[in-house]
Length: 539
Image 1 (cartoon, rainbow, N blue to C red):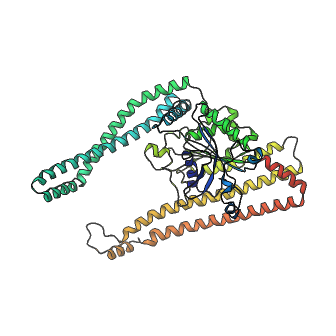
Image 2 (cartoon, rainbow, N blue to C red; image 1 turned 30 degrees about the vertical axis):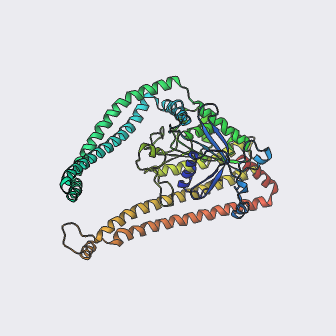
Image 3 (cartoon, rainbow, N blue to C red; image 1 turned 60 degrees about the vertical axis):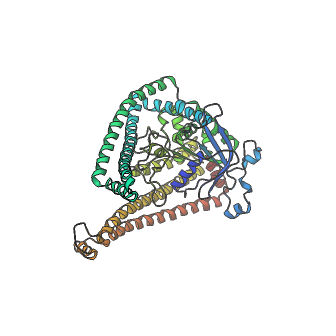
């Protein structure tokens, strides 16, 4: 699927999750909304025994109009495998590569082998090298405590509830021997009584104490074992794991097989690490074939890479969108804000706490009403700065390329055009991000105010007033719907309209710059030829 800047963050997550649904070559990969991602044309599955799963999807509908796609009657959705002719593969413009995350299922021999190979020689080895033995203990023990505490608390509460029901049922059964209806009534009465606030509080206190004690005990057992395992793996297993190297080879082969395609990459968990490493091994020429990269909840392997591989990732930072959840145990090795010392622009997603598996599978992500991510408090401004800085990389790269031997007049014009377009694009992006952030704040604050306003007509417990009298009393004190909700809406709408006005101004400017460049090229064919050549280099 050709990457579209209009895709919501939720849609990109849905695309990524398709990596767990692919089964065979020629499979059409579609989203629940019917969106066509591509057709599976090549599968790399455990090629050398290292349990990588890399899926290559081709999409020959890319760039066509809806009418042209409809007229094709689905004939363009056939796979274009590596075995296709050079000419046929050269026609492919759109390729999606998905690298699958760690397997966790064990109910078949293959899945068991996949799971063991993904975790032991790959995930755990990388974590041991990234954190070190002491760091592994410091990082893992809070997760061990939190999740073991939650599980033990939940199970304890379930047992207490069951004990109450069992006692009620036994008493009811005894009464039922003499009178069936009376026995049933006793059961219902006792079960209802068991739900009284004091009994609920008793069970909550007992189950929470059990959770705290159990979590502490489990953590005490886990910590030394984590230390020993991390020390052993770091000393005996090298970085990078073999799976990373295989993933890199597969990406390079995909680039060779589809020489005219833009390749978008998606990966979750282990797939994120595979992609980070694979990208770091590409040559400058190979990197030009990469469109956009979307990775989720994967450890940060950037600090473990040699300087030259870090530099390659830095050169493509503007192409890589790296999303992490700090509540996820696998999203390790990142700062709490910013994108320094990491692959791509790091988005620190605001999340709700989930069960450990659901957390890792991106079910804790918080979205706004437009299905875009809500970022963690305090990270938005840094993300904007990182985005602006990264978006200037193509200009800096091209300036370095053209500076050999000094700049010709055409080269100066080209660099000016690239810089102008990059600058105005940054202005548009920042304004859009500011608008979206303010809109998220508006929705959150107004929602809370509306909940408060709902209480204006409710009679407080212990008062004998009518709802109208309560409403009048609140109004007399200056509290009504307008003061609680309406004023907030007006406040935010005023500021949102200013953002919208700025966005319109910058988009008009963007159009004027583009039109000016096109007019200049129309008048000078030599300059137009130079622009076309340099644009190909600057991709």
